[in-house]
Image (cartoon, rainbow, N blue to C red; front, side, top):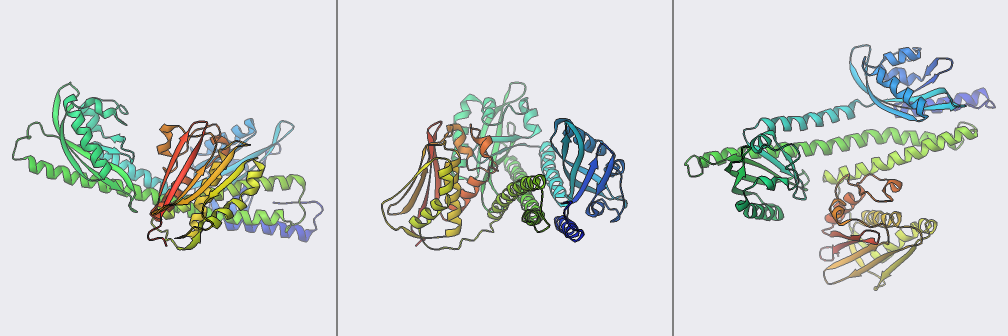
Length: 515
């Protein structure tokens, strides 16, 4: 609660009322423990979150006892570790209300030392039941799939969108005698008969390229070294919005039925089990998307409320603040801003993954649009001592696009070029057109990207390690969202890069159907 000894009684009341309103809107409870005097105080909102009456007084020991029996010690350990290291702490813990119901609480806090000795600990608590239920549901869904796959009478494998295999069930491992992880990626080729490997790989890569189902028979080395004929059948899998996720396949031994009349019946059974596995994978993908959307929406409302009221306090609505109070509020405000940016990224990706993005196209001059983006970021280029060159032959290039979302695409790509380019270097933007397409390139002289990492750039939650990655920060969602928006415009995006020499991001938008 903000407090100033020079405030009048009325001013202090207004300050407290504003702070309490901010906490109420964001559904956050606040507590304070003075270590030297062992006194404990909390907001009324904290009592409500713990299922207690509004004005019920608590001691520190009583507060810790409100957590489930094995989570109370975890809370104390987090606090004392923070006290030892002079840092903040965070923990997700369970609490039990007086009615016996179990709930999840997210607890944050910070210690405030004085002359190398902690004098008090400030903390916040927030209920996160909805998010935890979503997480538990997702975990249970994935576990059900693995349990089902591990008990299935067939050998099951799953590949990702790059073609590399990411999962084998226990029957596969038991059959081949391989250890978990040995067959991931391309390791599975080691158990294929040398005479069958080329044909098997050709069938798989062709089907993957065309994204069409396939079936193939080849010999696989069993755990005892004997090669047996197997029937492998794979189908492509997609998310609910049509994004290609890779393949799922199942295999059965056909050594004895290779020339048998029973073969058709066995194949039909394999196909049925394959459909079941595919449906399960699609359900897991839907659960992940739903969890991201739910968590983002749930977090944005309280975070926005906190931002508004912190801003009001900093603007003096509750009275004059001292230097320490302003510093603490500024730190909280900046932390809240970072949280909101992450939430916004999650929401944008959740919407585009759910197919909820509808382009609103209008005739747009790309020359002026790019100039506008560069003007907005001019101060940033100046601070970083970076030169920016915009090259375009035509004075005006007009195309029908969603101007607002295309502006965000350009902002993202140009901002990335700036962030990953050292001071004193040049960033170039080129705009040109041919008979079929509009082509835009963003060229930097930055740290560059290793060839092995370029395939990860446009994947969700993917970040590339480089000398600036820890300084720049980010969620790994920006380029994923950029590619989605460009695809919605029927365009393409590619990258060419060399380590320590910079990168070129080029995207095209077809002129046909965009006039």
